[in-house]
Length: 437
Image (cartoon, rainbow, N blue to C red; front, side):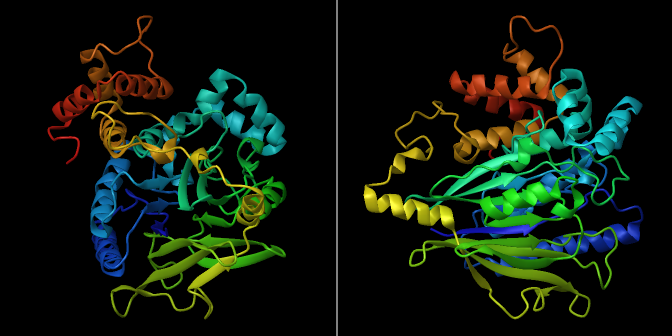
């Protein structure tokens, strides 16, 4: 089966400072939805990918606006509104949550490098301080089941099946952890907790990261891992779309795809509104991953989106990438039958309505996915706490503190205990509308 996505980046909700700019940007965002609807009418869209900078200043109200718009986009391209993958960008941080002490930590890391980052991450208080600026982003991303590892790890992890024994894993990286407003190219640190990517037979990787690799101190090491263990790297940040393929060695390729900006801070001839429609598929003959790209860009003359005829350089739109992990699976298949059951699966149709099995990110049932979306993305922390109190779901030893990891554990326990209907009712009571609306 093929997998098709709408890929965009740098939407910057909340950046508009004047009514004129707001009017122009709102029109472009409406045109993007209308264009995506036309372009995908004959396609089955799997989901939406956003490679960072959903917001402009990391404020809760900006993410709320983004959620409404993404719901409209999902409806237009006929995919579930829960099927959004997102990673954080530098504009998704809230600078008001960066204290002087946190700034000293960031400066020390940027000067002394990865060892200093690891030292701070091992201290619970320091780690919390580094992640505090991503609090609003966390609620937004958790709603889409994009788990943000708050120990220096990855930002999302979703797996899809292309064919029996052939999977595609999307791994999101958090390149915003050390952002503070004035970071420069080559100063950020990705860290080994993120850059050491998995390497499994039958599975190829698509890596999502807001910043291109040239923004990291450890870019050389990160590039080596990504070149050899991923087939596609999708980035944002620099607002200029581009695509290139690196023939790493015979039978091993990687595609670098920079999305451009869905809504740049200031639209111009250089920085135009852009997005992509992507399809991933399996080439059975060569046991390879194929990527089909339909780049869309704003035309001032048409005042609408058109095909970007220059991005692909006259090639494509379908590109075949040498995929060593797929070929490795083939070699094992010749020795014996593959174990298809290694991929987590959703609860089957015989499962009772409230008997939801919680598994990894890509495989949560739609009912549970909608609960996550409405609970974390659409409710404030205060509203979420009120629901826990009404459901008497707080731990017996609760002392008044509530971190985000605890919130998710409580939600998971409510669902495991067969109380998903009660949780849905409470969300509806807090928002004034049913969970599935």
